[in-house]
Length: 392
Image 1 (cartoon, one colour):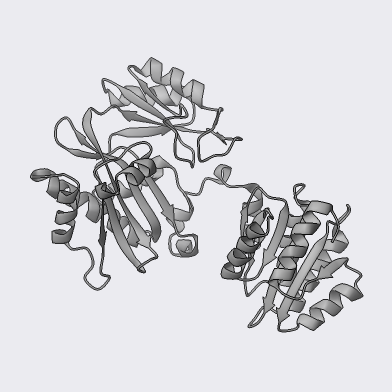
Image 2: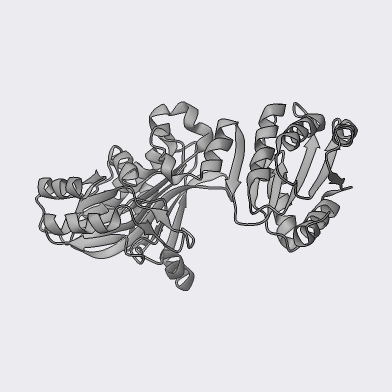
C-alpha cells in the first residue's frame, strides 16, 4: 500500500528523521492558512498523488508569500497531474502539502528496503539525489553504496557510519546521517514496510540534514497488525476494481491489456503473464485467487473480467490442490457467465490437479462456451490468438 508524502513524513519523523515544517490542505484557503502559520520566507506547494516525477510535471511550486501559496493550490487542486509514472490519464489532485522553503547546497539519496536478492533489509545510499535518480545511478554506479543488515545483529551504528562517509559526509553530519538511517530502518521494520525512501536528503545551508521528500510503501499483508496504518489508505488513489477485489479477498491489479487473466497462486499468475507477453499477448490484469476462495468469490472475480470492456478474451489457468479445487473455480465461472447479460468473450481454460475432470464436466454440462487447453503453452497460444481474432 502506497501512502502520501505528508503521511510518510509524519511516520518517519516519529523515528527521529528531521523534516521541514508543513501541513496538508484540501482547499486554497486552507493552504494559505497553513502558509501563514508557518511564517516562513518562502514556501513549497506539493501535489499529493501516488506518483513520482511531480517536479517535472509541474506538481511542485515554489512560492514567496501566503497569497502565492493560495494561487498555486488553486491551480493544482482539482487538476489531473500527468507524470512519467501516472500514464497519460494522470492522477487527480485532491490535496496539497504546504512546506517551508529550505536553502540547501547538496542532494543525497537514502533508502531502507527489503532486498529480496539476499532476503534481508538493506540500506541504499547515493552521493546523488533528486530528480532522475535512476538515470544518475545508471551513469555513475560508483555513487551508490549498500549496507545489508544482519537480522541477528540489527542496526549497527559503526556500519552506518561507514555508509555515511561513503556518500561524502564528514564530521557531525555523519552522526546526523546515522540517526536518519536508524530512523528509516526502524520505520521499515516496525511499520512492516517494504520501502522507506528519502529523495532528496539535503544538506542545508546551516549544515543540517533534512528529508525533503519521503516515499513509503507498506506491506498489505501485514496491515492486520496496523489498523492505524490501514487508515492511511487513500481510496481515491486506488483503482475501483482493485477495491472491489479486495472486498472479496482477491489479489488483483488492473493492467492495460485485452486478455483477462484468472489464476490461483501469485507465482503461477506471474508465470502466466510472462508467457502471455512472450507470445505477443497483452494481459488486462493480474488476478490471484486465494486458496481459501469460495465459489462466490471466484464468481465475483470472473465477473470483473467479463465487465471489463477492454477484455477481448479470457484465460483461466488453475492448478487444483490443497484447499482450492478446480471444481470450485468452474462453479464460480459458471455462476458469473450465467448472470452475464452481454455476449461472452472467448474463454480458454487450463485446469490441472484436484478435480480437474470434474471442472471440465461442470463447464460442459452447464453449456459454458469454453475452450480447454492441455497445458500452459497451449493455453497462452490459444488465448493470444482468440484475442486477435475474436474466436477461440
